[in-house]
Image 1 (cartoon, rainbow, N blue to C red):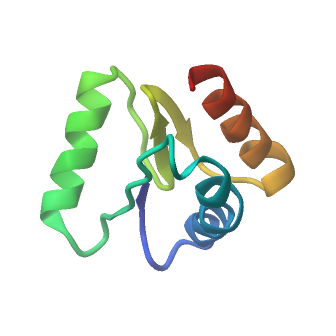
Image 2: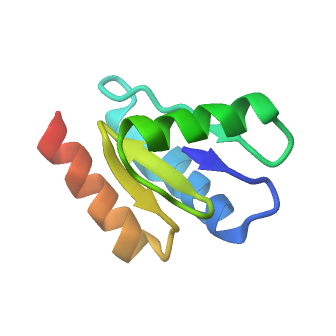
Image 3: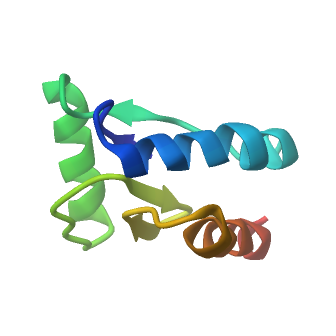
Length: 91
């Protein structure tokens, strides 16, 4: 997940990952968070992910689950649900 520390949608997604996904799938999924607003190295990594997966996003949060991109985060019941379903399909 590529995020900015000032982004409220990023904060909501991180909370969902830490409280819901990591406890349930932490033994099967390697969760990595990359803060991009202060790190040129993480910005470059985000650009490499977008190039590799042929996906162009203009903002954060930007999350890749085994190559499936998610940009933005609405709620746990919408975006979070789809993320959970994607993980279930891929493990």
